[in-house]
Picture 1 (spheres, one colour):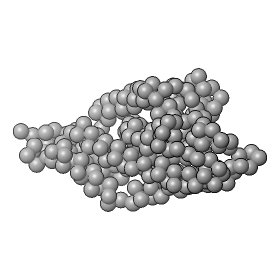
Picture 2 (tube, helix red, strand yellow):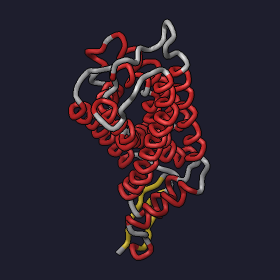
Picture 3 (cartoon, helix red, strand yellow):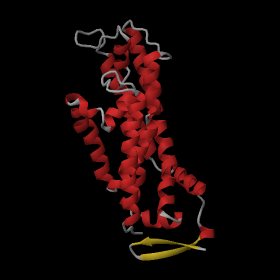
Picture 4 (cartoon, one colour):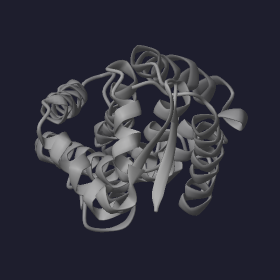
Length: 269
């Protein structure tokens, strides 16, 4: 039995016996991931963003225009810097996909995988694990830096109960849907520069403005859904389960369009 893969140079046949299984493809993605420096660079960015966010907030505590951390809501706002790791997780996942288009290795990778679907699905576990590590790391750094600042300001954050615990768990797990979102966008856009710039500009500028000034609309955007998942006290739009559903809807719709386009378009070796 043979498998046919359509590329820009025409159909190519590979013996099914020579094609790796799905588990082998997944292992290859993890091996490729560890062989690059991208995870190290973006891991450092995750740490840096969390540290900068917590230090800039922490030094303002007990100042005239600083946060009021006498309430749980105030303490949650002071420990919100881990949220930025979700964007890093999306960027990392997008890079895993778009790098193949940028370096024109996607055609050969699909041939080695046996099918386009196998190629796409092999990317997902590595992207999800990487995204989860990013958000867990971001939240750990946030707590390690932010909690001492709060205690120095006279607050006593209980990160093991209530709102702070929900926020910690939500932020730590945000890397899972954020990675799926980044994978879908990377496959849809394909351009590495376009995807990364689009993610940053949309998340930091466009979506942030909508969330701030038109919250009734923003609650249904990916950023509003993320805010619900992490129980962000600054954007209390809807509950966590609804946030997961909204984010899942965006991921499924975008992923469906991206995969459908990928299956129908030509790819080059």
